[in-house]
Image (cartoon, rainbow, N blue to C red; front, side, top):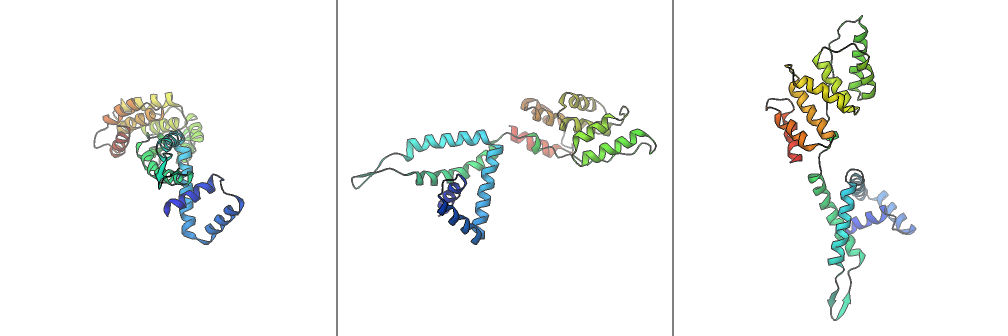
Length: 244
């Protein structure tokens, strides 16, 4: 049975096997590639829940124990003999509900900033090869594209005041990625209030900034401002659906 396999996996991961059973299970994994694949998937799901949904997983397990107390431990009368469902059967139920619960957690969990911070590649026009600011601009571009945002920020801040809106936008994103949220918001608001082609981008990033602050109401307001022709409209709708 599939449930028995999950019980075996759970017992192994929770160190509830004796040495003989543990060695036997490990030998099975070495000999059976399909079993190994199922075990690795089960282990990955456990690790995923532990890191991303630790609080919800704890609540889920608590609820499951309550259910088991009220239902699974009810006495069953059969041929005048009284039996109690053992922990083995609780483990079967727990395994099945665990994987059903995983889908619920994924669908109902609040969205996070890191789920939506896919940035465009920076590709700046060099101002002047002999200009010191051009050197730092190239550094900022390269570090940004390598996702080394701390170094990109240092390079941006060594430049002379930025007059190019594209550069300002990426500077704002760099501030956002390095958690300089007040400064980032000021940059995005300035761009959004301007007349450049980056207005909608600035609105999108104001929404992401609000998401990073876990201010979902403000995030929704910015998302709803984006017109249908905005580059990030589809992503905005996806995020909006998750919030609402």
